[in-house]
Image (tube, rainbow, N blue to C red; front, side, top):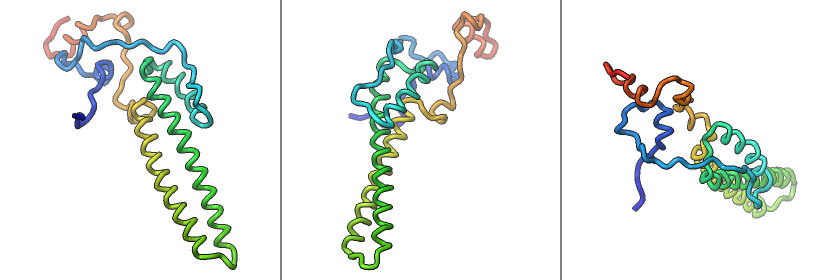
Length: 175
């Protein structure tokens, strides 16, 4: 049975957002390795390939890309390619429609057929835009998907242990 509501946040994201209550953390959460290589999938072409080459290194450098996230990133880039193809189709149909409307002896059936095709393609475009935006948020490529995340310095650089940070967050707690 599918889960309802918001998906659970990973522990690292909870800590980055400032969650201080140890009861809300999964200390046994697996730490997944970062990908060793950022080669794009072989079937990725066009705008999707450009998007991969633009986004993958940035996510990897930020430390928000695990090896298991590459499939989701590839899906996002494939849908991005599909969206671009549909946008080009809309442009071509609009040009063709304007040419038909400019003619003196245009058949009404031809006009209606092109208008229906344009309407159908516009609906496909909206659906694809929604899919791309959902995948973009899942991968962490939007500012709103990162808005609550703060960069946390590792304990070595910060000069205090994880236990000390918990205790300092508790009113009256001591490290």
